[in-house]
Amino acid sequence: MSVVTRFAPSPTGHLHVGNLRTAILNWLFARRHGGQFLLRLDDTDAARSEEAFVTAIRDDLNWLGLSPDGEARQSARLPDYERRFDTLKAAGRVYPCYETPEELDLRRKILLGRGLPPIYDRAALTLSEADRTRFEEGGRRPHWRFRLDHSAAIEWDDAIRGPQRFDPATMSDPVIRRADGSWLYLLPSVIDDIDMGITHVVRGEDHVSNTAAQVQMFAALDAPPPTFAHAALLTGSEGKLSKRLGSLGVAHFREEGLEPQALIALLARIGTSDPVEPFADPMALAATFDFARFGRAPARFDEAELAALNARIVHQLDHDAVADRLPSGMGEAAWRAVRPNLSRVVEAADWWRVIEGPVAASELSAEDRAYLLDAVRVGQDMDWATDPWHALTGALKEATGRKGKALFLPLRLALTGQPHGPDMAALLPLIGRERALARLQAAGG
Ligand code: GLU
Image 1 (cartoon, rainbow, N blue to C red):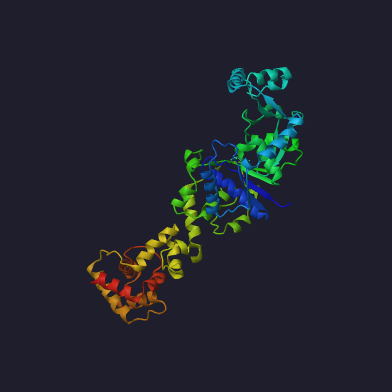
Image 2 (cartoon, rainbow, N blue to C red):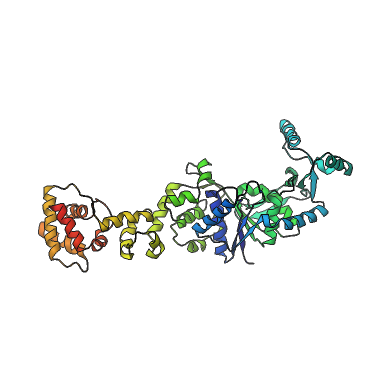
């Protein structure tokens, strides 16, 4: 069986980090098994769905590098839903209801007031033909519910949560269609999953009770249910469900200058028994992906952890992967020299400015200034071709008896204007003889 997963956002807003995680888990699982990853746009809510969000969702997936192998839109599939709805109607598995929202609300309140669960009482099932005609003639249009089968428990073996069991008698028959004919999410999703050959439905655990109803919908439509995997929810770094998570999306991570791989590597591993590791190649990460590693406890999303992971990934990136984001002229050697000092790719430009100059003047003692003039004399005579930093410091050590910080720091300050930075052995050849001697002279004079 070839794996087919889908990511099914509603284009009613921007994807937040929880949605991105769902997309990532679906993509990783499909890639792990050489399967397909589909994008399905749940846009049956015409009033709230916007084309701009459709575009934004595609752009976000593209930025993450999770290209879907296909795309479907629910708004283009309405005739398919109608057809399946007719089948269910003929089989008595959907039924019309005429209660107003106020009536339903009142009934709920009465049940809750008596300490009972607010389950729909199925009053609409007992309506006679004459009752229905009266409602229709009075101008009421029905909404529709799916009639759950109470004869057996609903069971499935969740790839993350293990065996699940629900008693349908404790559930309300779900509303699947509104009085205006528009669809709620539950049934169209099942029809799509059947028609698109979805083998694994991977989503957040907030959908577990939907799954219970949907398992019966698959059966009612004579289709085997897919495997379900419900991931525990994300929490913020404080361990609480945070408002911030709901607003964090790709725009923020891009603005922060983070690599998509960092987000993928973090979101793939939090909430699992595997360590968070700096995978620069998401395909390598996919090869390790396994639902059996996921736990039931909430997954903690920590922006500080993301930043640290980003740095470790940047340290592995090849020049090719970043060239279009570097200042013009910054080649392979310069990238390699500065890369270990970066938290984010954008910081490479700061070191490129240091290489190109001019550099800031440093406060130096008279002694250090004299030392730098010694360095100029050594530098003028030495061979710059192979390893100028070791040639320079080796000769200076011998000539002045300086060592350690006293030997290196004045040179670093004069050459870069900074007390810390990339390995001078890598940096000095990039600064080059002329610029280096001028900087030593300026700082020493
Ligand atoms: N549109 C639904 C959501 O965003 C899809 C859930 C599903 O994956 O079935 O929650």
